[in-house]
Length: 176
Image (cartoon, rainbow, N blue to C red; front, side):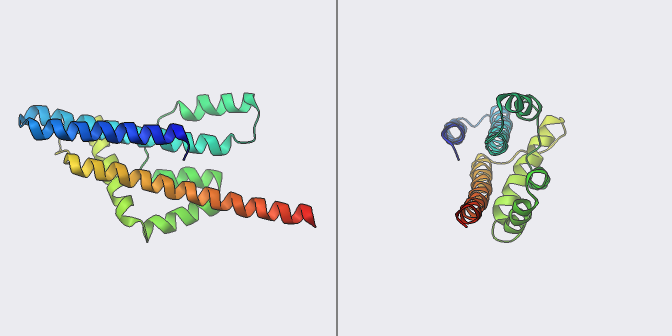
């Protein structure tokens, strides 16, 4: 995770905790509902931005400026719905092996984080499409945000692990 992604995470978490304090100090139901919906949108958009930035950094690592510009306009500036299913499909377009490992990890070891992320994104979709529903609590939103970041870190680890194996293989081939 690069510094920009870390800043997005920390700034969002700081704002979510600030909202939590405001909610605890103010018991007006309409005001609290507004803050909860805002928190869901804030968290989901921050996770989307972090995910897209990480993927952009991976796929533009060794391309020219024209290609970077194209990818930026056709990827970074587009909205994605960062639920676990869509992330798996997106990663599969880049590297099927990493996608398979990510899917296996989030379906086994990290299912708690997957479920939290999916609940957040589902609530975000409910709000975005103005359907009735009860938003998550601020603690659930914060936990879902942290869960989403943990999944992004897991994906980042898989990519770095794959790159190390790739680099080691290239080094061995070049050495021989």
